[in-house]
Amino acid sequence: MVKPSVKISGRGAQSGAVPQRFGLAAREADDDWLDAREGIDGPEPRLRTQVIEERARTIISFNQSPDIPFDRSINAYRGCEHGCVYCYARPSHAWHDLSPGLDFETRLFAKPDAARLLRETLAKPGYKPAPIAMGTNTDPYQPIEGRYRITRQVLEVCLEARHPVTITTKSARVLRDLDLLIELARLNLTAVALSVTSLDPRLSGLLEPRASVPVKRLDALGKLAVAGVPTHVSVAPVIPAITDEFIEAILEAAAQRGVQTASWIMLRLPHEVAPLVREWLGVHFPDRAGKVMAIVQSVREGRDNDPGFFTRMKPQGVWADVFRTRFRLACKRLGLNREQSVLDCGQFVRPSADGQMRLF
Image (cartoon, rainbow, N blue to C red; front, side, top):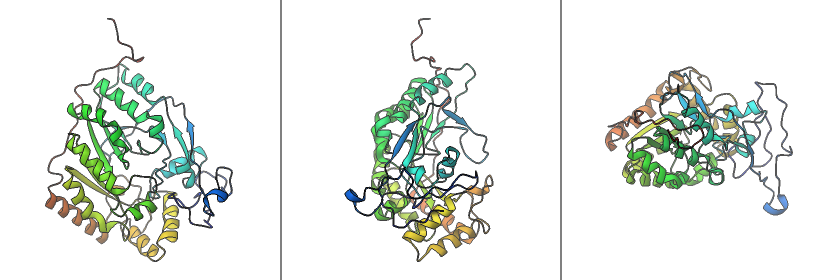
């Protein structure tokens, strides 16, 4: 692993975190994708975000995982500029011969043909509708969405085809598509979840440096709720000794804004995410790094991560029981999770593959 010589501000990862599983060569800190503008910005390295347009052949990813509530998803982007250091999607960048560390948040891929590919898939005679999940791997409303608008185009196709779609994000940028979300919600075709990790903007800036600050996420949930869009708050991930103190306060703030449902996820550290988080702890919280990892391992049977179906989402042990109980009691007190929304798949109208209306 590349050891950071100075703290890297504005990014989550502190180094390249070289993937070893695929035998890829190490990346040095002075590689040509680093943009060190010391003369302008001072001694800290400033990393320029690069975007590659990917010409994908398909856009819906189907899965058979038995422990997640959806079987298909769309990811308009690969990599994520939000830079959440704990992101479980980071290892996917290794397949591109890029690091799950700084490359993941600075070398991004956009899929500008997503809406066209979605239309073509929905137009196939054998296609059967079920909710499409957006934001399951990388954030559909990360900063480059402001330029590419791929997520909006996908939502437009879903509205036209009356196809259900769910969104998970860490960005208040979702409100830019409020007009579409209102129409989809009116037809019972959408629900929106925002993930909130803490209520401390400084801590959020270290954990997820380019995501919306916590209060903006909560306010976005409130505006969605007022507009009639089913909303959900995800307290995720819960990082012991770092963010767990905020569980009840996040739920209370969300409930006050009209949020109806909530969930929580314990920190997961698959593959290269574990060394990245260790490195992050060493840079920002050296006083409690050992405690954090000890608790993480205690809920995963002594391992950094548990990849098993069902068990990966259900940590065990005393600490897990404490967090689970706190969450359950807070939800009960606040009236959360009394009802769960079920999206309507029965309104689906197969679109034309080319977007043109048929004469006959």
